[in-house]
Image 1 (spheres, rainbow, N blue to C red):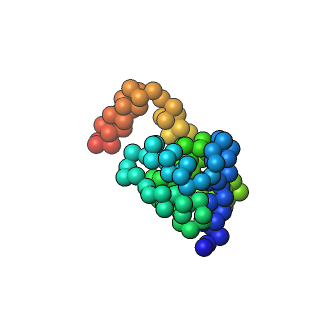
Image 2: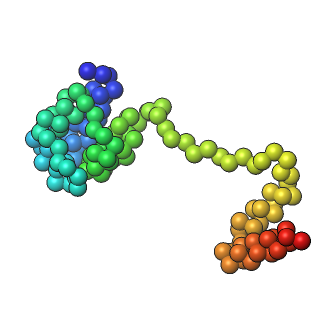
Image 3: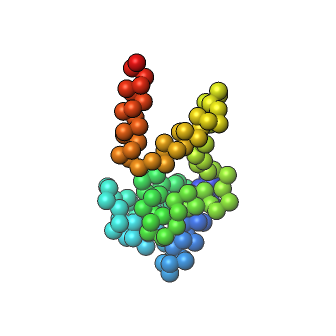
Length: 128
């Protein structure tokens, strides 16, 4: 049994206790299948989740997290996890000066109708 699966099972049991549910396979089986819109899971599956023998697939993890009011990544990895998704910041292309950046930022601040108008103007000017 992997340490990761065991830690998941502990977080799942704690989430159940927090909402007043006894962390037992029968309880989880009933709660999960009442909420999940896919093919129902077996009693054995919920037992394996709670005993640290397996982990749910992502769609099932989402349902478990919603059931117990916690973030899916916290349920899966824990609060102090190093597994985080970070959005990368778009860098300006090399050679883009301060003036070009100001123009682009001003353009992005325009309402949609004006952006469209500026776009048409740029297209017309680039054809000449």
